[in-house]
Image (tube, rainbow, N blue to C red; front, side, top):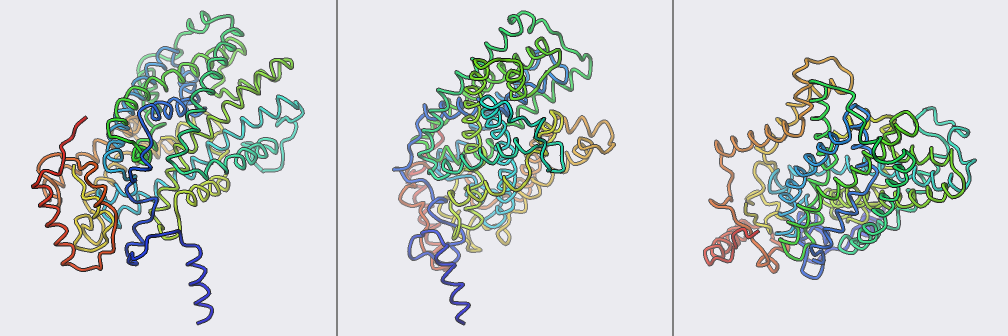
Length: 534
């Protein structure tokens, strides 16, 4: 008994702060970070979203994806068209998914309960949390390469070719891994700040990093003898091969946004008004990412002129500049590498640590909040050996690849509208699995297994194939078996929910639920629900 009491006391100490009076079931569904954002924390205006996306667009990941299109044989203008198409499509999805967060002020894990069910949402939440941890490690390792260049620009003896290390792999060396750990450690303080305050980091990044990117562009063009020799380079592939590589370029741009499409509501929930997250995102995303990609495309193309070979990574090109330059050139590399390190920090927070922290909060809300989840994400990212995913451009791009009753999203009773069947929405899972199955054979081909050419073509369009199949399956199933608690017309509940959306101790009674539902119907009849207003 004494040992059990000690464990109980330890569990109580580890638990995050929660409101008094919540039942055990509610403690499994809610904490402060999961609740709808109250007005005091809604501090993101339209210019905050503009700064956020400008800052996020200037990152090495985006640069590498656009550069890899040059490596596979596209000309600079063909690669840039891929970028415009891919990120314009992504922006539309971003605005649609972010609209839910901006209107109801809830994040992805809570939104998922409406689609997958109260308990059924745990799997997609876990799935996204796991991928966010992996990508945190990948982005942190790229940031570590920036630190490696900063150190080497000061001491050229900090050379990976002369200090290979004993890691048993050609993917990393002692200097590179130590630099990765330094970046990882320096990132930890930034994870401490709450989401509604971290917007200031993106504002600083939006001013500093683009200037460094433009400076790198000018520097590379000067060394290549001007822009003329760069833009005159033709595509090295033709016919159907060119067509499918063009499709792959568009899909790679969309894949770069896969995580952000899902977790945009984790940021838009802090919007002051729903419209603040519409045009600010719809216009800034394609423009910002197109500019960054243009710099990456031109710089990668310039490397063909300077070194007679295309270099897909801007960091590899900066390393070359260190080797054949003096102290002034090394200082330039230091400043640009510092800017890229800041870019990686901001991207890791936006795309990975916040999403992983929010997801882990939903998985274990009694003991994890966003801050704790972010640190768990960082530890997992350190442990999963991210350098193995970045050994070549081909491998890198392969791995890439209504109306809510908000209060009921925190209700675990079997009579709740989002409990569905044992807490799992079977229609959503049928659609989810269908979207995966259409791409399974093609994915096997992408990792080396011989498959029919038709499966490869389908996988080349993986995002659209999965989306269309899942959407069609979900629509058909909802027509055949309508979902309860849905409205006949599209509606959004706005700020009227502020006083009602917070979870309360329900006592677990069926009668309490019926009274709340009845009161909700009456409120709808009094037109307290607003129609969509973009």
